[in-house]
Length: 104
Image (cartoon, rainbow, N blue to C red; front, side, top):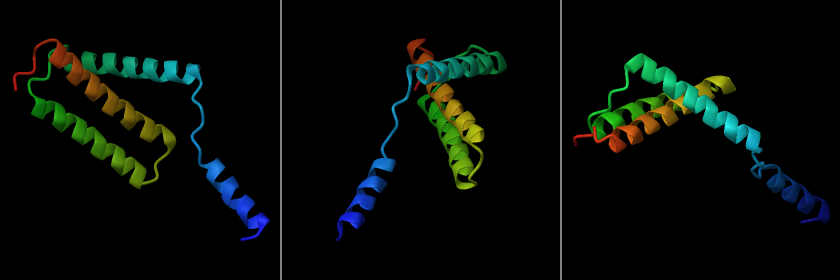
């Protein structure tokens, strides 16, 4: 391997490294998630989910929808919305457990 080939391999590896996420984007993501959670509570009501199976079913459905968006190479915003749906489903599950509403 020549020096030139070696440099291109290094450059390619560097280009795939994760970028640092600025604090602003972390806060914005949490805010979006909170907004969507409150929207869902307004839609569905503040009652708990009643079982681990119900929580699993909701998260699985949202995950499947995310897979579809990725597979269809949908625009970024469609994928973001599905990720928010997954996060909201998980938070709804956590809140349901914490409230003592999950029976089994």
